[in-house]
Image (tube, rainbow, N blue to C red; front, side, top):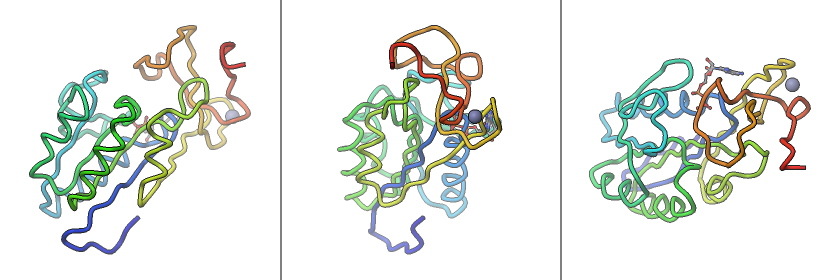
Length: 189
Ligand code: ADP
Ligand code: ZN
């Protein structure tokens, strides 16, 4: 966490981990604090993720904050003009173009906070989050609780037979597992 705030210094914060690890919760917490401080805040999520709401970021424990559902990163850039603080959830769904846009916003003096999955259901790094980690000023790795053994969990187990990297869902499709309890789907072996 950065503690020195000067007027024009922009930076990138990344919050990343498995599903149910508290990424959205942490993103919402940081954005609420910025709002309390009367900073201009713009909050985005990808159109693809309308699981709980199309106009809010909603965490699995029912925290919520109003957000704009956008189709791509160009829309994020366009709608961030007046913002000092920018929150982006589900960063893994925006593709590699997210990197450049976040860099531009940070160079404009904005605080950019990106939450997203670090690994896909096969346990592979989920672009563009690895690249975002590389360029960020601050990184928070969040952990869930393994549903099998109770240890800290950093993997997302898909519990259906579906294949394909993008499959939006919650406890109906995924559960949090530690590295020992995680069972790679056949296609990953
Ligand atoms: P993420 O954005 O990382 O998917 P959320 O912030 O939406 O996570 O949700 C975090 C919340 O999920 C926790 O505070 C807890 O209430 C709930 N939760 C459900 N399953 C688990 C689990 N296996 N481990 C930890 N938290 C869980
Ligand atoms: Zn476990």
